[in-house]
Image (cartoon, rainbow, N blue to C red; front, side, top):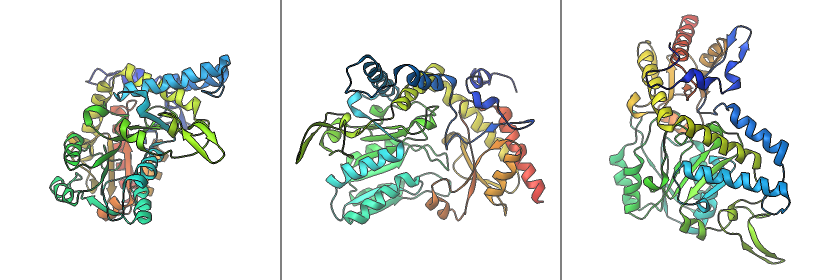
Length: 414
């Protein structure tokens, strides 16, 4: 394949920015990384930004008045500003740093949920949710005697919007759903879904872990009340994520954790919470990780989110065409035009773990299992799937190698 795809996106030049992509996993076996839905690789600029913080500016933030503390605070808050611009949020007050998407959703469940829901209230979810957007609501429902409803997934791997309209008649207090499925690749029509939820007064939360890294997201345009995502899936470090929230909701919510930084004043028997967003950021935060998060956002913006989306669509279309030619292989989810670069599949009578292990022998890194979406696999009556997930540094040649790898698996088990 040529260095540039038909989109004009110079993927070979991009690959030079990622040190790990030059690695051989075994002598003579180069790495083909198709597991970015689990975590993305990191470009050199992110690694350098985090190293520079530890080498030159390492200090705790906000409370110190010495030079290093001021530099560290500036770096941390500058990262917040970058991420706010990246998702087109109105203000830095509305962007809370969390450990990841999971913690962001738990924050909403335990702070907003406990203070705004009552026994018998309905929460509306979907059958395609990651466990991170199921278990927090299950815990809350058990504690508060809430009712969980689920928008069904059709056999084609999209949400049944007719059933959604019927479920809205239960007057759910909250709708929580993924923007893009980490198994099916389905990109949900959020604007329409959120509009209808808000028309009956429901609060909306979006799991954006698989969307923010791959295509432009404008939280104001979507009108989501809460939007959660993680740095490590978008070229940033692990251990940090973000929660965007509507300011009026965040201001009324009590703190999620107690301790340093989230307070304005403390007495022996009482405290006054800090202003947004610090009210929800107790203790010393992941400062270096925030710096890396900001560097990752800079990197993505320099490449252009539209170009990244176009490049991934090219890869997905090509992969789906190639996979359609393989007998006994089933790909879950909708056609390429309705999905992102996530392809979950199974081969008749061959377990996904065997597929992944044989692939690994050729240096091809894919995922195998239920991908933290067990109920979805139960619905489709499948114990596990293989999953290839593509990102901005993958090539058409790697897709060919992946397809060849599946054929090798079939030949071995023949």
